Length: 240
Ligand code: CAA
Image 1 (cartoon, rainbow, N blue to C red):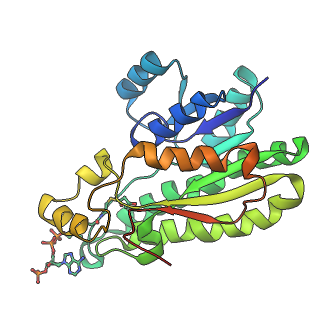
Image 2 (cartoon, rainbow, N blue to C red):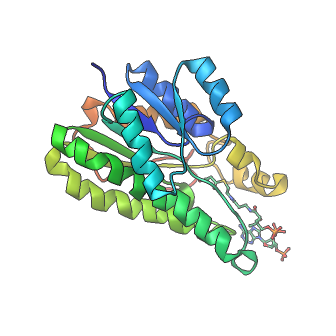
């Protein structure tokens, strides 16, 4: 039997592209989604990939969700922590709720989901965890202290968990996208986005499929010696 993957936030945007890229590699994919049931249903109709709803920011919901997937689909070999939200504002205008929601979902979600799958991966001696970070976790971004902190946290989380998984055949990597043509980036005010695109050496927004290909590679058997790394796919906007 092929591998089983969960892609959080897997029915829209970058997550949708990751789900279908893994499916094309003969992985049995389950997409988790948080809120948009209509979109998730359409995604399942289009792709045949089942979509399961739970809040990745809710620890118990993650444990229950993964237990359901394990019972109905099979043990989870691949986890892609992709679910994320933005609540952009400068610090002066940012409420504690805007801070907390982003940390809880974007960073807490990685912990909650890893907790739910890591022991099983260790026991079976094979696993792949890919955490979607961000160029803005690497370089910071005006108006995003919450998001930049969460994404930066994801990069640290990745390196720490990679050390714990290595001797059990579990690799843990991060992928840091730049500005990708999705609903999330479309929400950035047009004038601001124009200035951002002007700073991308490749001269355009990225495509979700360009991120998904990187994730699929990190999840493959061939990626077994890559762990604790960050793959930056950002059109040259941030290099280090
Ligand atoms: N650097 C320096 N100054 C900046 C700035 C920047 N990057 N961006 C805005 N400013 C300045 C403006 O020039 C303005 O200054 P003045 O008052 O002196 O004219 C001041 O900040 C206020 O700017 P706004 O009018 O835009 O203020 P606002 O409160 O309406 O909005 C904001 C602030 C919410 C941060 C808005 O600028 C914004 O949405 N910026 C985009 C943030 C962004 O890039 N988010 C990424 C979302 S996509 C994503 O996160 C995916 C990923 O991983 C890449």
